[in-house]
Length: 156
Image (cartoon, rainbow, N blue to C red; front, side):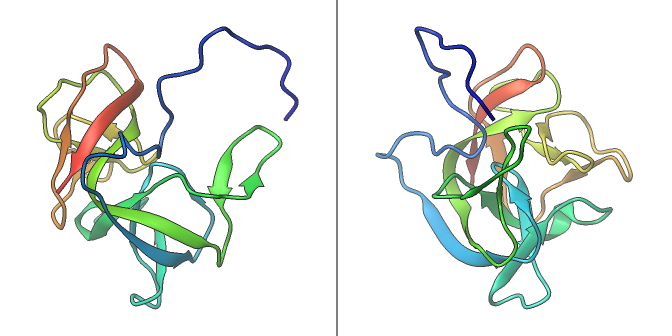
C-alpha cells in the first residue's frame, strides 16, 4: 500500500498494540494455524501445545486463551491489513493491557464480549451465534468509545 498522505500527529494506538511497557504482561508464542490479524482473540489450534487459530465460530468465545498482539509481523495485504501468516510465530497476550477494536460504543469498566463475525470487542449482551462471552479469560474495558473504534482493554 502506498502512503499518499501524512498528518502532523499519529494515531494514539492501533489494534494489537500493548498499552505501555511498564505494566505487567504475560505473552506466549504459538504458530499460526491460519492467517491471524492483530488484536483479535485466539483459541488453541489442532496441536494445542503449539498452534492457535481465530475465535470466529459459535462457542469459540469460551475457548479463547488470549489475543494476538503486535510483533514483527511480515504479511500485509494490498488493502493494508496486517496478519500473522500461516506457521508464523504469534505473540499471544494472556494477561495485561492492549488496544483492541470495538464493534460499537463501549463503557470503561464494562466486561468485554467478542463479536464472532469480526473478532471486535463489545460490551453488548451475549447473543447466540453473534456475541459470546469469554470464559477462560476476563476482559475489561479500561477506556470508553463513543462509537466503533479503539479502546484499551485488560486481560486477566
